[in-house]
Length: 421
Ligand SMILES: Nc1ncnc2c1ncn2[C@@H]1O[C@H](COP(=O)(O)OP(=O)(O)OP(=O)(O)O)[C@@H](O)[C@H]1O
Ligand SMILES: Nc1ccn([C@@H]2O[C@H](COP(=O)(O)O)[C@@H](O)[C@H]2O)c(=O)n1
Image 1 (tube, rainbow, N blue to C red):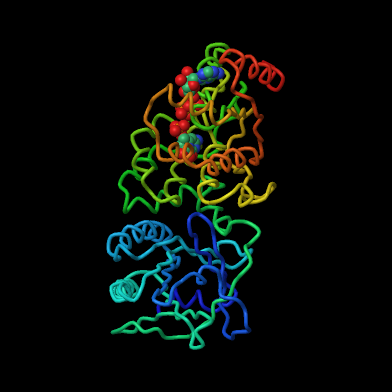
Image 2 (image 1 turned 120 degrees about the vertical axis):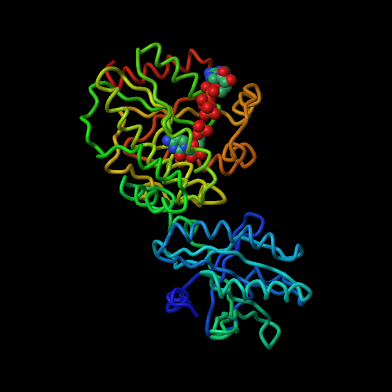
């Protein structure tokens, strides 16, 4: 067994395992002795002929490689596994222990597919950073056991220990919340920069992004003029409002991510969350630099900023209903201490049906995340709630359903109240 896999073992019996079936998580744990507990739900409906496996990707020191490999693993499994084999997202974590989450996949096959599945897993365990387990009924035929596989110099064996699987309670928050900090959301320039720098060897575009970054964060003075950020889901009217604010206030309008990143955006949108989110986080620091420059001469209006970066990242990392999000007041919602704080952040909200109507009328292409917003009402609710929970500055919500002019007047009132313009 590799030394990385060994490091997962000392607290193996304290770990909780989660398998996501049709979007709902099922939790189980393992025990060395069986004390008459139930069979976990995820195994209850498994037929006698079925066989189950887990493939967990343990985190090597190279986070970039691990993140890339996790995405590639899914493609490989989908491509090489027999079509009858069912693949579900899986994770394992130590409750309440930060950064303890490891992700992977749960496979369900049957006696006809077990040989090709096992051949593929044997190959994986010898070449890739994975920990493989198989699950089978215990001798009494009532319980299920987990067998951990181990690779030796020449073969793969289901070695080590046999554990019983038992039901486990759902954690208070979604397990993904354990790893959000500095993997999905970056709280300092240095953390995001570090990821982008390490990408340089495998993603040539990363070098071009690094060259665009300001040399020193917070190097500029605080802007003399107010800086107003407009946030909201797509088609809530940000572009319409920011254009009007620019004209009415004689302000400078800055889009986010900044225009200089446009050539690289589609490239980074294809990358796993660690890399993609580092790209957007760095975009905010470039915007902050531009804000410092322009804000010395005019008020500045920014179309999206940090709220968008954090809210979309948190809402994507966590699945299921809004109650799965990290609790209100969690450090996950804190503003990065080294990032410029705008004078006012306005969040435009809109009834989902009206938003869809505006999207249809506009008739433009949509990004995958925008498609997701359309199809997945829970995702939309999680993004909106994450927006509301971010603090330092918190956003002020404005109903965007009245006419464009009424929305403009409403926001001007807020700006005049808060920014003395
Ligand atoms: N208050 C409003 N009432 C009715 N229609 C509006 C209003 N504001 C904007 N629209 C229309 O809704 C559509 C979406 O608006 P807009 O492009 O400003 O949204 P957005 O938030 O910038 O979207 P995205 O983030 O996807 O760029 C446009 O066709 C726009 O003309
Ligand atoms: N500061 C920002 C701005 C945007 N994003 C991400 O971009 C997507 C929405 O942008 P649109 O141009 O389509 O409005 C969304 O996926 C955000 O995650 C960001 O992260 N930070």
